[in-house]
Amino acid sequence: MKNNLLKIWKNDLPVINTWLSLPNSFTAEAFGKMGWDSITIDMQHGQNDFNSCISMLQGLNSSNSVPMVRVPWNEPGIIMRMLDLGVMGIIAPMINTKNDCEKFISHCYYPPIGQRSFGPMRAQIVYGTDYYNNANNNILSFAMIETQEAVENLDEILSVANLTGIYVGPADMSSSYGLKPKFDVKEEPIFSNIKLIANKAKEYGKIAGIHNGSTRYAKEMIGLGYKLVTISSDFRSMIAHAQKIIDEMKENSSTNTKSDSY
Picture 1 (cartoon, rainbow, N blue to C red):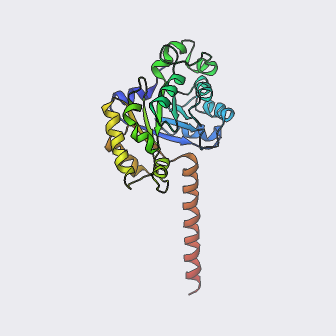
Picture 2 (picture 1 turned 30 degrees about the horizontal axis):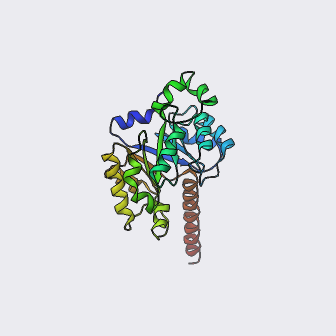
Picture 3 (picture 1 turned 135 degrees about the horizontal axis):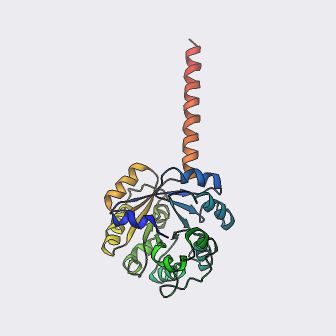
């Protein structure tokens, strides 16, 4: 059992991550062949549940992409069940305090680090019978920083032992400050927070991650020091490409109609 993301970070390189919002094993399998460093199944705002995640992870089984999941909440049951299914990383939303983060970490790791219960049924099939001995050294834990309260408690959250890193949710952070929720934020104070979080993560020896709406912004975030960058999702990619096609066709149709009228 080896988590390839740890090797990427050891070489001081960024991890390129994508998001699966649609509960479809075929989509997961297709994305798994594209070359993403990691693929995260979204259970919070995506349409995925525990049962759909089983077939999606099976679809990713032959992939070199590391499977992760954003759980719907910082709740021990779903975190431990997803780890037992074989995901290698957990992203937990709305971690606002040190206490929130300490509880999160306790759910992700076996004793003596945490209080994860033993029963890795599928994980043992995928990673072998020595899974228990290697899990604590390979499981990734990311606390989402997405509120004003979390930013104010940033140092305390980052001080939690065994936390892999923090992950910025720019949309919720924007709404927390009274702004319209969106990605690729340049408005203040959100952009200053984004830069602060990258610097603080480096100071504490943690990985900084962030959700992005475009490759251009993601590359800018890498320049700021982010080592886990997520670009779009299966749903957004599908909608954007389909919309581009229909817009181009309607534009051509309009042009042809005008030409025919002369």
